[in-house]
Image (cartoon, rainbow, N blue to C red; front, side):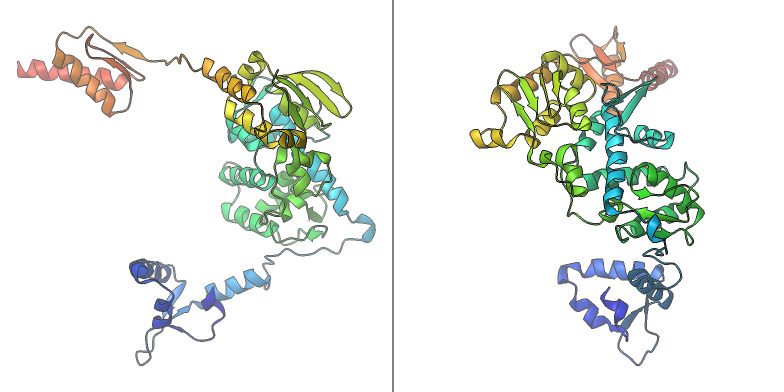
Length: 426
């Protein structure tokens, strides 16, 4: 970057002054790589000291990208939208919130507990992407959140958005999209201005398709697929910022969308008898609680319930860990709980959640194959050691000459070869 605006070649001595002595070998390797990529080149004048300069096509393109100059419009093309058609920031925030919380609600199953999905209409492409990323499991018509999905719900909003966008990029080839166009558009989104409409005139076919997909996530707003302009929402404009990076399940979206919700302060109270009180009216938060607690009563601004062995074991069976449940309760604990005791959560509750998880880990079943009845010690040890070397050995008992493996094909082939070799030797 320092060389980008230097009007003359950079002497090699100056370049070496930027590098520590122990990193000289790395410098030489990197300079060689940049020269092979035709990004950097040496000066051709043998009478002058050795110097380096950025190649002109690369330097000019990078300067245009940084300043938004040229015809490629790396910062987007503002649209001259009529004032009556302008979307306000408040409406953009409301749209983004509905779409994003609708996605999280779909993951935690808010519709299944009768809470709705907050007005969001999820397309089949969105549902496929969540399933492709291992965030949900679809069995018939039922949708269940996975362990990775619950960890995703607990992330900051910006981290959630980037996770989805990375999944989208990984899935680009399957969608017949150009990965370079996808990356270019994603980087452009972070430089757009909230509340400003942008023209679609300079977008490629891949990027036009992205507008439709990103609208489903609440990252982009379009009045209709035929509209000649689009708006970035706050989810897009904060992609390269950590200013609104708060927890999503309660205060996260409020932070990313500048909400003034009281949930920002924490809303969960849990007692030593495992009774739980949540001061919230958010369908998303209630749906998350219902994953590991039995909800009994719902008021306009509060729900109450109880954590039981069955409710926690149900969550664990879905792939949610005990530590994730504890982390959620700690993160969203009501301020009153933080003020009254050194331990935010009752130790009895924390210990019991972990004990309930351990109950299911006492016995673990593994599908596989048992090999036994070997005639000699050598006949037993050779395939057993081979199974260990190829990583399929689960259990062995040298005294009884038995071992258990997850795959049998390679072991059977090994035993067959051993038998043929013995016959040949005999």
